[in-house]
Amino acid sequence: MNGALIAAAVLLAATVFGLVRRHRDGVLRARRRNGSDDVAETVGPDEMGADLGEKATLLQFSSAFCAPCRATRRVLGEVTGMVDGVAHVELDAEAHLDLVRRLNIVRTPTVLVLDGAGRVVRRATGAPRKPDVIAALGEVIP
Figure 1 (cartoon, rainbow, N blue to C red):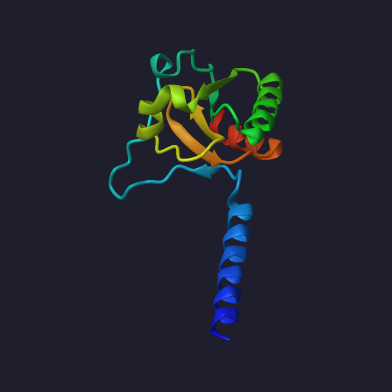
Figure 2: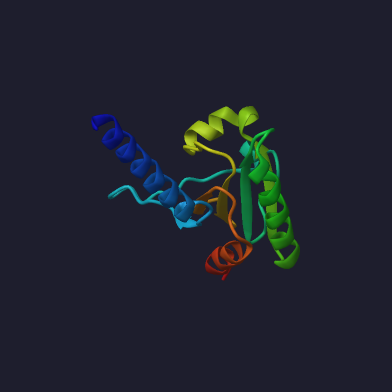
């Protein structure tokens, strides 16, 4: 009887974890503020190896065998084609480990929305939806 209860508890915990992860996956969240430390993380063109967009930049961290990364690349490419002054930069996480560590990238795809100065204003882990990306840019672009 104990084995059945343990199995049921593990199954319930795994189901709850999966539902929470599905709900949070791909959602563009505002950056966290660390108490009185109100300095935003910034990413410069020298770190990315590409120029920032005039108004905003969609910075995508990917890996070689990441299926959601391909879908994310397509969505971000479509959005940058629709919105003037926005650039899409895709970086291989393995090739930019210092930046990955500094920005606390723990999973691919991770998308950072940078303002025109390179400050991180939004972040999503997982594949974001096109309307969410457009909405996030609407908040960044004046």
